[in-house]
Length: 245
Image 1 (cartoon, rainbow, N blue to C red):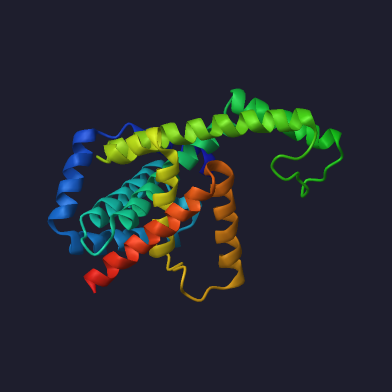
Image 2: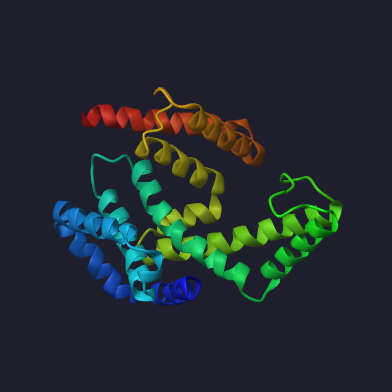
């Protein structure tokens, strides 16, 4: 039931009336403090409810609230543009993630590749709780895994860009299309500051390990310059915060 509800919620959300979205954004920004408080209360109530109580319409409204929350943050001068960037992109990613989940569950190439990979795992004697690290395993497995990763990324980015445009963030969607490295770096810089993952703050080992793993992924994908740019962006946010303080 939960899976079918989310599939229907995605259909409802992606077919939302764009004029109604525009009006909702304008209304929210007229009283940002009051509307922020009301949206946060709705989000809190949603999280406290059991998933089975979430109807398709309620799920779609939840995604809408998350996007409106991002719109309000983008108008708040206390936030650096990269912090607002993360808030908005993170909300849109929730929708894109559901679209990707639907693609894995529906007939098509992505599900076919997933089934082929599961078959190879059984052939090689892997238990349900065992897996190969990315880039390892038999050659035929790696071939399917690479195709699956590329296709997943295309689906994710297509829906992510569509949602960003729905809510008026055309420049974010265009950045995703033409400069993926800068998109990923802005998102990570904003995430670290919004979630309190300050590079100069004391951190537990789990957070440190997670950040180092992400930095290695950035290096693998874009080269060392990506991490240099990340730290540069974080410094920009810190300077902005000092100016606001």
